[in-house]
Amino acid sequence: MLSFPTIMTIIEVFLEKRTELIKYINWTWYMSFITITITLLLSYWYYLWFFKKIKKMNA
Image (cartoon, rainbow, N blue to C red):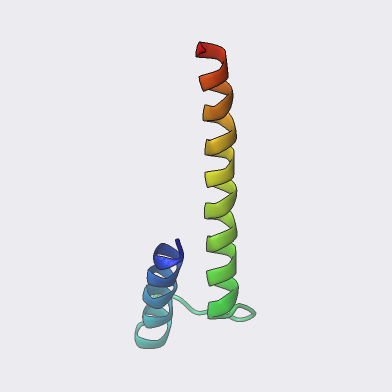
């Protein structure tokens, strides 16, 4: 469940440290990890809710 946010955060930290593509002023790696995780969880919960309603309508 946490593999995707972990991979994305590792890539982001690498890009920030090794390149000049990303320069953060008031942002840290754990804030990225938390926001990505929350966004994915909210999307998943919406998906479950939505398809539960669709399944009830078709039953």
